Image 1 (cartoon, rainbow over the protein chains, first blue to last red):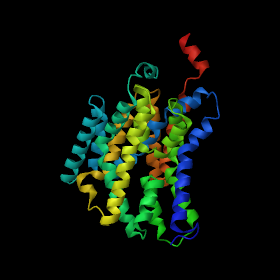
Image 2 (image 1 turned 30 degrees about the horizontal axis):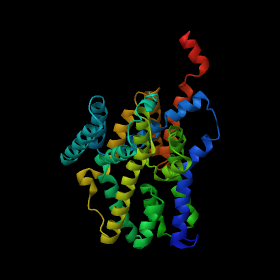
Image 3 (image 1 turned 180 degrees about the vertical axis):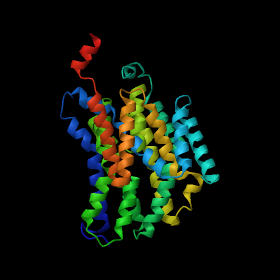
Image 4 (image 1 turned 135 degrees about the vertical axis):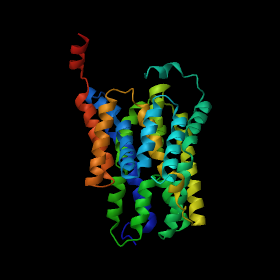
Length: 102
Length: 244
């Protein structure tokens, strides 16, 4: 058992508090500034793509070729197809690739 | 792009809420699968059903909850658990910094309630919404409350049945989110300097994943992408030169 913080419930409350503090932290810091430097603005505009791509590339490259192929197909399909079709197509490539033993 | 927000306020809150919930449908299976897995794994790690549900209801961050139950059974100081959860959830600081600026339509109460429900899929969906028709509270809560409800119900079901899902990999369920995030990343390709940002973050996170290991490859990799945007950004001075 983990030691400290009043047992399991105490620890869960602490973890929930830490997580919520992180969820509001960026906004609390930035909302203190009335105007942001254009470079800061540019950095913030980059946040969604910058974070989400880190949840894609490492798992795609550490898995089998099926994972990498699924991501590659999804990237190309996104240029033309709506999101749901891309998701279905990418998953189809992955499942087919894994079934084929890649 | 953002000026479109003002022209499309014809949406009723009810319609916005439904739109938000509908956006979840393509990935609705994901919180269900992970919730079932978390519920079962949590019971196995020695928590009871009430503690398991309490964790899902208050922390509401899947990966860090798995870290918590993984460490729970070990005779270590609780500070290590706190540190691990801090590291896994650190990226949320970046999310709220970015998304907070798009929440002009939110009251303070709604905004700080909204942040509680913010997850990885949220940031992609909400930022995209802000880019297109503007982000309003009803849409945001429609999307996130649906995911939250699925997460809690699945946690309960997993805890009560106590059975781990056998081989989620067989149906590719372990890889739905990376494909979904790919779609989201591609959705931002109209933003300035998108390609250098994605390349810098993707390459850096992959290198760090192998050198340092998870979870810091996420925040540090993203930091590299953000740094690329900051460096390349056109400041007013450079913009004048361009226009002239």
